[in-house]
Length: 51
Image 1 (cartoon, rainbow, N blue to C red):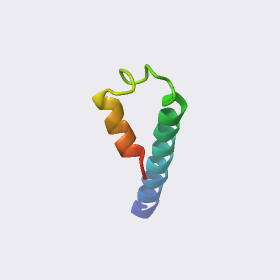
Image 2: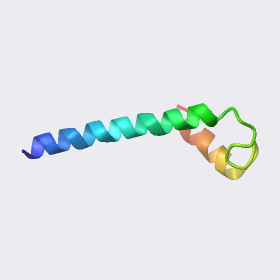
Image 3: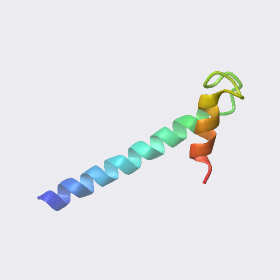
C-alpha cells in the first residue's frame, strides 16, 4: 500500500514539474513577463531553468 502511495506521489510530482516548466517556456519570450527582461525575478527563473 505504501509503495503505491509513494509511486503515485512521485508521478504527480514529475507531472507538476513538467507543467511548471512548460508554463515558463510558453511565456518566457515575452519582454514584460516577470517584470521585464532585466528584473531580479526573471534572472532567478533563467538561472533555475538553465541545466
